[in-house]
Image 1 (tube, rainbow, N blue to C red):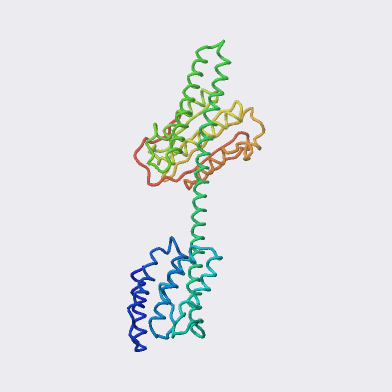
Image 2 (image 1 turned 135 degrees about the vertical axis):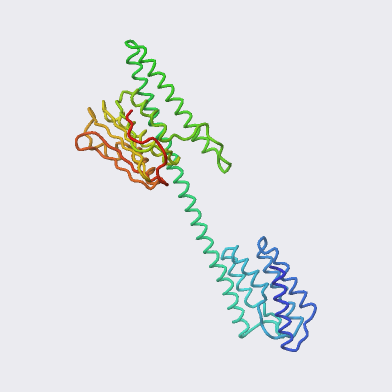
Length: 375
């Protein structure tokens, strides 16, 4: 920038001298070069640089009799840097000084007047206006970037809240029911109590592992994320959820239809969490209910349905509102929406509750086991 500015100012000064048949002087050329070289400090010391450029700009006016008024490029660059980095209390006096100073001493006149001041004022206004516009656009860009960052943080917080809710709600509910079952059967059927305690221990271990995985992600920061101790659960882990539901006292039927095939990790995790949350809600709110889980693999889509009969449950209407399930149904809706699918969750007319989701799966069906399986 400094070299280019010096070259432009020297060429402009030389052309003006040739036009007016006045030989340029060495002092004037050195002053123009010096004014351009101080621009390397314009970002750190904009006020001092502008003052130096204004002072050095008087030398060519006094060293030659060229009468044509002009604003050197070095002055425009220094003024632009000052307007970009300083408040109006500094910018306004600087602009007022920059209007008359380039013409001081021209034509052996101590103070400029006439059209020279008008031309200088127009140039100063254009430079200052351009700097103000760039500042405004930069502030808007920074505000948009900050807004995008805040949205990304909020989205990540919602995702983490969904994961925490799924882990805590499911495992803690299972552990509570297993502990109650073990206590109730401890004196009458020690074997049943032992199985309940084993399930309670497994559920607690699984909850701790999933919590550690989630905390590892939170602590990773900008560093490369290490591989978790175990992969995220998917549709292939539904047998474990069904077993836990049965051991917790809920009669649960599991049906798989269509050719079984691997699902993308995010889709498989969504299926797993929907079944997990739906069965947890059944145990918490449906009383001695019977649950049916149906997983259907179709062309380009996978559907999951969890239905319970709600026997012994309170009236079903409140169960369809967000006040009953809190973040549970909200989390399911958000998960399905992120995958581009649809979710239905509502009380049934003849009693009970139904949760059904359809998730698109990229690609067609792969080779798998055909038919229908009941477990």
